[in-house]
Length: 188
Image (cartoon, rainbow, N blue to C red; front, side, top):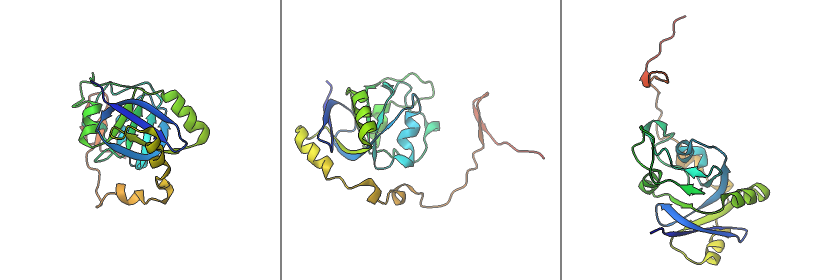
């Protein structure tokens, strides 16, 4: 049985859909991404810290999660919004589903809402603060929470996503033709 989730925005609007990923509540600045692929890279990109990402492409999760496509050590987004979430994947490299991955990192997601209307609202009004919840059932209370979220520009998110130590890339390059990592030496 699908669990209900609510996305409420600081402007007083809200969307009712279904939960995927972790149960609970999350908040952040709502922004959108127009990519058709690359949701795993988006989720783990440190530049999305503090934000709830809305995907404009309708079908997200169909190729699962692969170890090779992770951008950082953890999911960086605060929440994830999609039109249609896939719970089964078809990529031979995938090790888990998008739903499993979000649960692993405690990220709350919502699907089954009109993402076109949501993106249009964000496009016209600019990035807005919002809350996704599987706990609170009163959208009015969630709108009030959204209004009280601190502005993202006043948060030190760099400190949260920066590495603790210097590291060097010694892995080599990925050979797209043969499908393996190799050290490439250049001759002059």
